[in-house]
Length: 228
Ligand SMILES: Cc1cc2nc3c(=O)[nH]c(=O)nc-3n(C[C@H](O)[C@H](O)[C@H](O)COP(=O)(O)OP(=O)(O)OC[C@H]3O[C@@H](n4cnc5c(N)ncnc54)[C@H](O)[C@@H]3O)c2cc1C
Image (cartoon, rainbow, N blue to C red; front, top):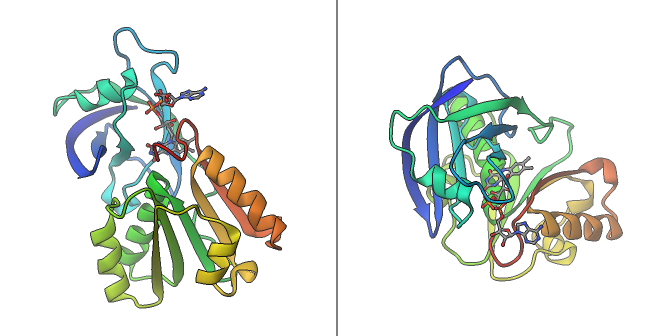
């Protein structure tokens, strides 16, 4: 499927949102990811393909890639797209089970920086559908200026059952999360972000008593504590 580049928007720091119109209707569940290919000259070792969460909500009907623009040849090619370009191809349809699950347990979202993308899609869709946003988002970041903060504030104002805790410049640990979310071990906990952080926090949460069946993880490779 061809994805026609519509526009890009600067969010914060080196984070941009790139928006694409699919050549056929794209259906997915908020929180899912796709694999795309962007052919370009002299690609580096990581090549011309990447996985990205669709940070748009399904009702928007577009692919929105929200990402840090690094020096990688893929990201450089992405940032040079001109509106109307049809260079980006969808090579794997939306997939993944990192989606809202009504299990009766309280929902806790934990984002490490750009790992917020699935939560943005999920919350935006639910807000649009008039569904409850009852969840706690713990949003960890290197600096206080984070993507989607305005929308998050809008949603916490319209639905006070959504709580957002911002944790800037400090590691996210099970101990810190327990201070912020008292019923943590009874919750369904979603962790998304740099691969090393998601792995370490997942292990820490299990060590502190979170049953494995209540842990969902979304790993973003090639991000770490210095670049998320
Ligand atoms: C399910 C899923 C969803 C994802 N969703 C998103 C998303 O919404 N937004 C997003 O930005 N990303 C997302 N990613 C990650 C994305 O696919 C890329 O891996 C990421 O954006 C980095 O790509 P890049 O081109 O910037 O860097 P890369 O070229 O992949 O690498 C970036 C930097 O990492 C370092 N590096 C690379 N390989 C190694 C290595 N082997 N050892 C040590 N350092 C290394 C280098 O310093 C390099 O400059 C997702 C990944 C998955 C699997």
